[in-house]
Image (tube, rainbow, N blue to C red; front, side):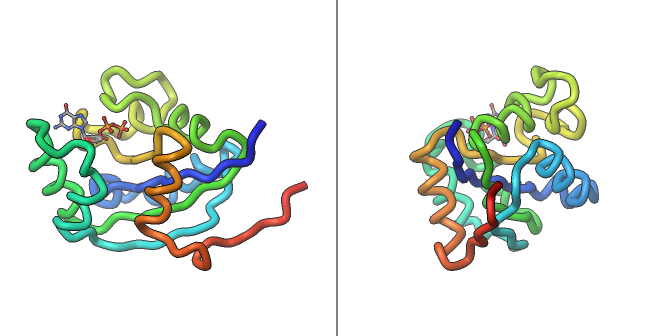
Length: 144
Ligand code: GDP
């Protein structure tokens, strides 16, 4: 088992729904630690850069508008297999297809307004964490 870091975002629709606390509890219940956390409102430019991989797709403009529509909470999570563990906790991109008990199943509105983000691989986790955090921003816990 590998100790990993991943990037999580509590997206603007989650803040509208008032579920920051619930989602942080889901993080901790999944055995993950929050080692970096900040609230911000993404500019359209910052959202475009974050989702650059989706540039050219039909939903790109709407995605950028949604992600910059209100504040979000950006977190760096750490734990054993944190990347997959957080993806499993979130559930599938489309809440209708997400498994029972996952965050997106429980709180997602549709394939766009799906409450959370999680990095999908080690290289994207590294670059996404660096997109929002300086290494000095991240806390270090004693792991037993
Ligand atoms: P994720 O890794 O599960 O977040 O999924 P993707 O990387 O494929 O997509 C990034 C984000 O774009 C998703 O979380 C959704 O908010 C949005 N998105 C993805 N697919 C669609 C789509 O088909 N339509 C719309 N409107 N939004 C989408």
